[in-house]
Amino acid sequence: MQSYSIKTLLEKGKEVALQEVSIHGWVRSFRSNRFIALNDGSCLKTIQVVVDFDKFDEELIQQITTAASLQVVGEVVESQGKGQEIEIVAKDIKVLGVAASEEVQGTILQPKAHSLEKLREQAHLRFRTNLFGAVMRVRNALMFAIHQYFNELDFVYINTPIITGSDAEGAGEMFHVTNFDLDNLPRTEDGKVDYSQDFFGKATNLTVSGQLEGEAAAMGLGKIYTFGPTFRAENSNTSRHLAEFWMIEPEMAFYNLDQNMDLAEDFLKYVIQYAKDKCPDDLAFLAERYAKEQSQKPADERSELGLMDRLDYVLNNRFIRLSYTEAIDILKNSKPNKKGKFKYPVDGWGVDLQSEHERYLVEKHFKTPVILFDYPQEIKAFYMRLNEDGKTVRAMDVLFPGIGEIIGGSQREERLDVLDERIKQFGIDQEEIWWYRDTRRFGTVPHSGFGLGLERLVLFVTGMGNIRDVIPFPRTPNNAEF
Ligand code: 4AD
Ligand code: MG
Image (tube, rainbow, N blue to C red; front, top):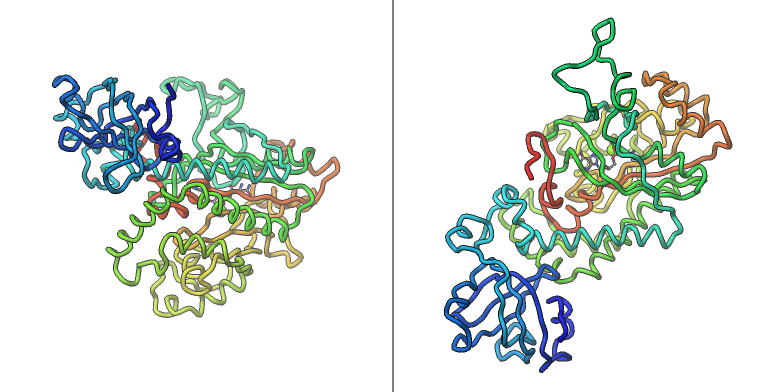
């Protein structure tokens, strides 16, 4: 007898009619002591199992409650009822794990609407819900597409270290890694913590980015990408920030910034298209949720486009490319700026852009994704290539509707003398990154790369509003449960 996932079984449909099959899953509902809706996580849908209760023990029937796990053997038949092509007439039912009704009542497994906050509090159970199941399957499709995309283009997937001694972004938002006894720290003569006695013989931290090591790899392998967890101890409790998130960082030797932008745009379109092709049911479900959520928002915050339209919008439009300087002009003269509607007024060249500004450009002004480039050097990292003007660097940020920055990248400074100047400006210790400087000493080449925050991409594709709802177990300030 053949064992099937519910997804495969429903795909086969009538093709398997009259066959005896075995399936596993969790009970979503048991209607009239006769119809079990069973789900196994392989897809959004449930399969209907028809139970002739005369043929089963009363005791067994009573154990078939919401959230219980079952193995069902039965015959596939064409369904009499509406809503499904096939169903299963149960011959044998095994209850693998019971779920006491009184206990289920207090959890998100109870079949009724639950808030996203409540789902988060029970993150270990939310994999059972339609909503989180759909988000996770879309996330999975995106991750697979990311690997496929780079693989098709002959990029080499490399793993950069999670424990590092450097602060790639220079923002100092790092989690320390140590095996010191924190109540009894060794000190140097001048009273500072003596890291030379620490596990690695120096101060180390969780990586904020694999880029620097990625660059070293690209200097031999040509085109590489990393895809791993990154950690930032920034205390920003927003719907766009996590303390632990997954980042995809391609790095390409011999690429200039224009080629970098071309790649970023092509890449985003490819993975979004893949998710659309692969997850139509999950996305239809998420689109419905998105529409409902939007309809409850005040008119001026409501998105004009539905979820699927928003995806198509990205797929069918060329991303606008705009210099930081041009963006500042637009923002300075924009209505919200003149009317004092921005929380951070744009008063001149050199200010860092906030997500309200990014979203204004994308959602109101251009109504298409935007790639901003050539930012002031002061507000970007040390490794970005200095332009002829001596004030801007070859940075690029890809801005998306509803999200703001989804990708950050740049052409890198490949000239050692200029790099050294920047290292000095930023107060970085030359000795510390001697190996990074070496990559500019032995056959340096123009090169570029970028970083995509996976969860920001998942937010965009699923239409979810909070980044905590698109990662299995979110890490944010004051929250490391599970
Ligand atoms: O712009 P960021 O800081 O760029 C870098 O780290 C570069 N080293 C990347 C590179 O050129 N190889 O981060 C890149 C992306 C952002 O655009 C955003 O999507 C995401 O990472 N990101 C975060 N996502 C969730 N939570 C956070 N706290 C994030 N910080 C950045
Ligand atoms: Mg950035």
